[in-house]
Amino acid sequence: MSIAIAISLIVFALICSLLAVIGLPGTWLMITAVLVIEWFEPERFTWTTIGVLIGLAVLAEVLEFLSGAIGTAKAGGSKRAALGATVGGLAGAIVGSPIFPIIGTIIGSILGAGAGAILLESTKRSVPARNEMQEEESARAGTSPIRRLRRVGAGAAVGRTLSILIKGATGLAMTLTIAITAWS
Image 1 (tube, rainbow, N blue to C red):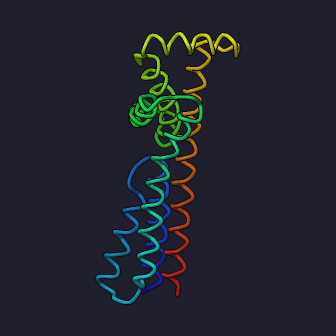
Image 2 (image 1 turned 45 degrees about the horizontal axis):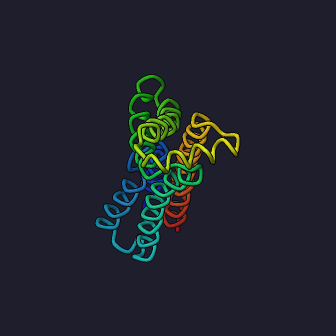
C-alpha cells in the first residue's frame, strides 16, 4: 500500500470516528473502506483484522443501545422511558445539528434523550393501586414524582453520554487497528 493511500485511509478513519460520535455509521464506513482496499489489494488486511473490526463495530452498536436503556432503568425509569430516551436522543441530534454542527448534535442528543425519557415516563399510565403504592413510597423516601422524573431524565442523559464515549473510543480503537495494519 502506498504511503498516500495509507495516510488517506487513516485520515478517513479519523473522520469516521467523529461521524460515529455524532450518531452516523462511521464504524461501518471504516469497515467498508477496508473491504474496498482489500478488494483491490488482496492480503493487505487479514481476515482476522477485518473480523476484529466488525466485532468492534457490532459491540459498539450493542453497547450504545444498552447504555441508554441501562441509564434510564438504573434511575428508575420504565421501558417506555428507555424508548423515549432513544427517540429523544435521535430527535435532539437532528434539532441540534443545524444550530451548531457536531457539538450541537452531541448536546442535542444528550438533552433529547433526557427530555424523551421524561416525556414518555410522565405520560405512562399505571394501575391505580400501584400509583398509590408509589406515592406512599415516594412520600416515605421524601421524593416527589417531579424529582423522580428528573432522576429518570438525568439517567437517560448519562446513558446517552456514555454511549457517545463508547462509540468514540471504539472508533479510535478501529482507527488504530487500521493504522497499524496500513503501515505494516
